[in-house]
Image (tube, rainbow over all chains, first blue to last red; front, side, top):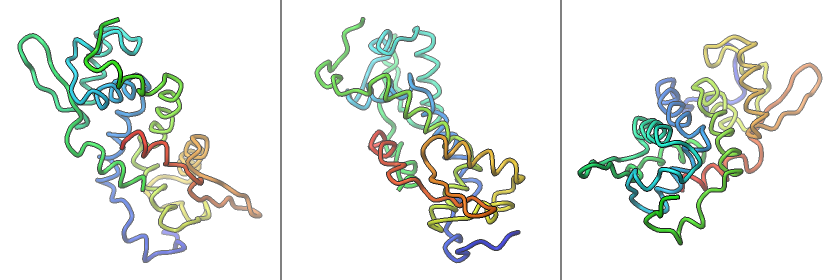
Length: 102
Length: 102
């Protein structure tokens, strides 16, 4: 392995496992419609999925897919009430992402 | 369009153009090797590309590809000195990304 400029500092570099975890969450954020859905949900605090259809110019099945991706990435909390699922930003969802961008 | 819970607040939601721009930058971050390269460069302040080969378990051409993706996304500044290119984090690279995660 090549000796790098500042070896002591690099002891603190991102571990391979953390990098895989963070990359998966950044991937969930790498779609414009998903970012706009997140922005809507963050603005409202909590949103019924029924209110998100037609908001970002994509079909209901596509909205559902995007919400599932965001939920699976740990960025959204969801709760079913009767017919509809309600979404809000998962507690601490962005802390690790903000930390790695600091 | 469905009326949503908190219409006034939604005036501040992410614009479609901003969402496209941010999604492209998050896409650049959606790869574990790229995150580890960024972390190395951020730790060192500035790194010669020659020092990054063999650091994250990928080949030299793959390192070069990842560095290009990060540069094209506006996340890395690069400067050629003789044979080698030196990289550092682009000024303000993460401000908009941190803001959208706030």
